[in-house]
Length: 111
Figure 1 (cartoon, rainbow, N blue to C red):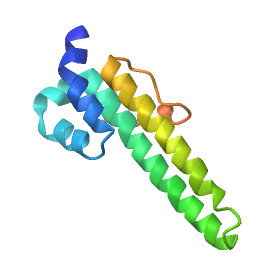
Figure 2 (tube, helix red, strand yellow):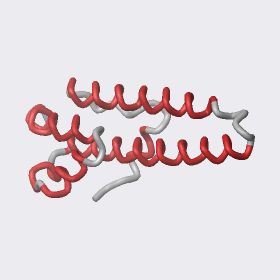
Figure 3 (cartoon, rainbow, N blue to C red):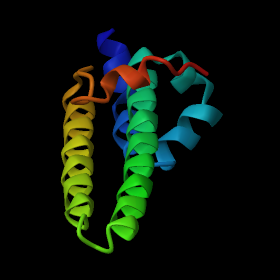
Figure 4 (tube, helix red, strand yellow):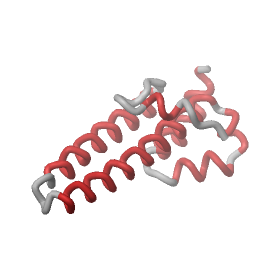
């Protein structure tokens, strides 16, 4: 496992700079076998999907409310920043901690 962590740190960290790490993971056979890199690729994919959906929802709600709910954009931005930093720090320090609130979504992926 320690070897997986050291070999997969770069790919795991780049995974949060979507889609760089995902592409690396998909084209490099060694990364596909690396459980540490896979964990962070799946977490980053969950992060990207959730943030995309939240921004779409915030946009729709802001438009429907004629701008009254524009604070939702700020909330989504803060959440996305927290998730990004948490994932990047976990990857760089060799930890496999799930992202706050959305980590279980990453468990559903496997490719």
